[in-house]
Length: 340
Ligand code: TRP
Image (cartoon, rainbow, N blue to C red; front, side, top):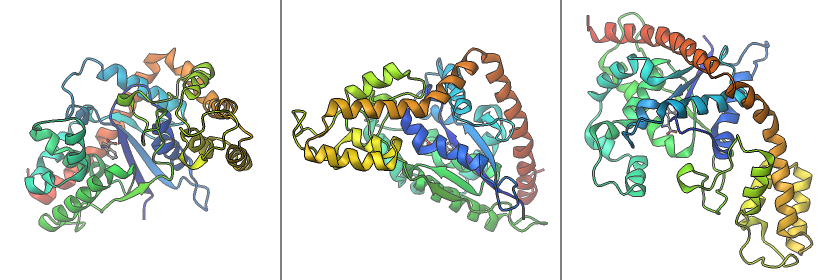
């Protein structure tokens, strides 16, 4: 059996924040570099920029390209190696549009209307009605995954309903259109949720998000990190330095659990509870721990940011490789469907 394939993607949202890093990117890099018992790569890894998907929530494309470049710079700075992992834009591989169309015949609109992730989004964005393409969001995502025969899909929890739809489409396609030589064209992919999939926002909201303006960016300097963490929400009942605090409700403490060493986390919790540690000192330690982890990323980021033509080359090369694999899959699909 061949190596398992990992496929994941993000919409081009510009510079990434810590939530993207702990929830996705860090894990992508680990899987890219993971070795099996024989010392070979454990997975093949493919990373996609979902620029078609962005159109589901905004038709303003003025910033899409610059957002793509900023995001890819963050991917590379965090350790994505484009020789190992093709990095490509969905819109540059037309097979995504073709498989999306074919899959759209295999699923009912009522099935798509029941998608809880879509319902949440419609509610959050106060949308009165949605486009036909937006309803088909998970169908396009299924095409993204199955074109590369992805077996493992690292995603956040909100994406699980989409993975379920991908699995249904793979099954339904194989049942309706068994391939004459291989039986089934597709395998059902497995989702993989990362442990730190949610990082709270600086304002204490459940999630860091660009639209809420409560983020620390991967590209923030130590001074910017210190300033932002300095303003973060802590236990609102801990007003004076020596008031006893409750780490379990504190956003800054939640960052410590991810960025500070375990023994430090333990002592911070105790000293916060006893009132020995004030928020100012605690935040300073937190900002330092975050910046220590970001410093190699920041350094690499600057190297890429000064050479945008190199970033474009990474995309062109990834897109060539993606097209080749996507076309191989589409040949099987067309054969199974007796199209041409
Ligand atoms: N829908 C995903 C998100 O918003 C992005 C995405 C598009 C994706 N295509 C994908 C994720 C394929 C995994 C696999 O996060």
